[in-house]
Length: 171
Ligand code: AR6
Image (cartoon, rainbow, N blue to C red; front, side, top):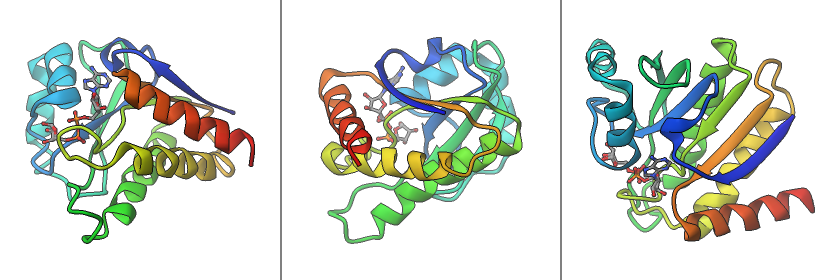
């Protein structure tokens, strides 16, 4: 069982499932969502249209189409409102429900982007330890998922997850 933190483009990851930081329509957007749809091709949008959206903190799965990843797990994380709207619980739910869906679909390797810390503005210093704790807790009882990678796209995000990982190791 491993949890790692890397700097990469998630659309290049050759894993069983990549997670998409989507919105509740599941019909695409900017950021990592836009990059995943662009790389997967139009079949991904066609598949997403059949899912009829997804509530915040829940997750839905599609194939990866033109991506090197077999599956895409779509989860809308919370929009940050200063921590006043149960954002923490919704973000924990996004990680846990994505991993549950990976487990159900036989995925051994899963790659996550930093959910909600881009356009949705969740503070990275709070999001990074929350994400890694949730993943770590899940991995303690996981039967299928073996390797989870946090894929960071900028230095500040990478540094925050590295620090959170060091704290996990030191538990
Ligand atoms: N690979 C890995 N990480 C990436 C990539 C990539 N190719 N591109 C961006 N990131 P965001 P959110 C990082 O804004 O905050 C969309 O429009 C990025 O640097 O993509 O959950 C959706 O449709 C940041 O660290 O997601 C929603 O409307 C992280 O991914 C909304 O944005 C998340 O940033 C979701 O906002």
